[in-house]
Image 1 (cartoon, rainbow, N blue to C red):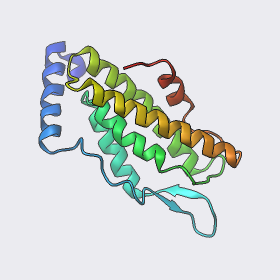
Image 2: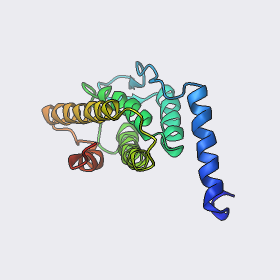
Image 3: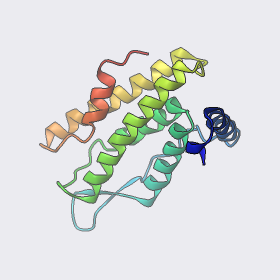
Length: 164
């Protein structure tokens, strides 16, 4: 319906969605403990159902133009991968690739948030981006220790030259 409507309809819809998300405090960072669980009988991690709920919230935020709020949560999700191990071609690797794509989408949403003049605290926005950068760097260093495949390459590339 939104795709076939005039642009003003989509803008009004996303504005109403943002107001609703602010009212229900969806931008608050959820507890990320337990979003990854140990697979039975091994040292490898697997995504939990709790992670799916958090990613749904993140997608709702960046889809509604609240990119910085979603990046803050995604930084915590990336940080939760430090110390974990996973196998190539596993459910965990697939989930991390999806999170990498989510980060890229959230960055685009955050850029549009800036361009649209909806960022009220630029310093806070910079802190969110710095937190995400630090989490990605820490994850990269951690995966090098165990010769794992770094899962957040697109996010790292998206952040490399972005200055808020």
